[in-house]
Amino acid sequence: MRHSLVLTTYNRPDALALVLASVLQQTVPPGEVLVADDGSGEPTAAVMRTVGPRFAGRAIPLHHVWQPDEGFRAAAIRNRALARACGEYVLLIDGDCILHPDFVRSHVAFARPGQFVQGTRALLKESRAARALAAGETRFGAFERGVGNRMNALPLGWLSPFVPTPDDPLKGVRSCNMGFWLTDAKRVNGFNERFVGWGREDSEFVARLVNAGVRRRKLKFGGIMYHLWHPERPRDALEANDELLAAVRRADATWAEDGMDKYSSTV
Image (tube, rainbow, N blue to C red; front, side, top):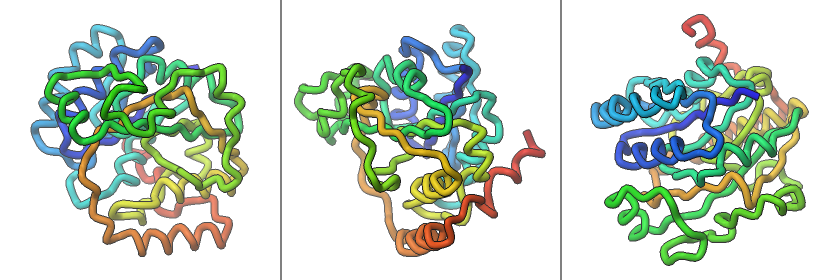
């Protein structure tokens, strides 16, 4: 199964460099990596130029998919990246989440037709994240100081199939650690670009997947990642985004009218 790793980023070149380093340490490398860049400046482009030869040396295609900075438009940049993806299966992460070496392998092994996978994350607290960034660290232990949500960092893959999935398919949805089939994403037309500003674009995407008959599966003790601390983003768009999500749930909608299909002619 060919798989694509889609990584969203915005003006965090130090974090991006660490995350890409962790991608190169995977026991099973991704078939390709698409950095979905929501308008970052030159320092991020410099990171891409620096790491490019390392990915080429491993024969892992690395694509920098960029759009102009017009505010928080995660839905749009993810759609641009999905339109360029070549894999059957997509692993969606954020550019501030460092991957355990078995991240890709465990996700791919957990994938099943007709399902999407929601993973979890451990948290690197502020001081621990700062030390990791300063030292270029990509390996962490579940029980070391400065790690939060440490149960999410335990590599106990044999337990993963026995972890129940929440009855509410939207509970705990986070696009920083998600796996889905590209055909399913196309069936619902990707992310809804009417979501501008932080919040709920990932929940709304999941709501439409579920409405289309795609079932959720929870991955715990595999797909391990460590989220680097950062200040909370402004949430001034959250009320409007909550209303968009509620409308989709009321209507049992499956199709995003403003979605990824607009990019098919540019690929």
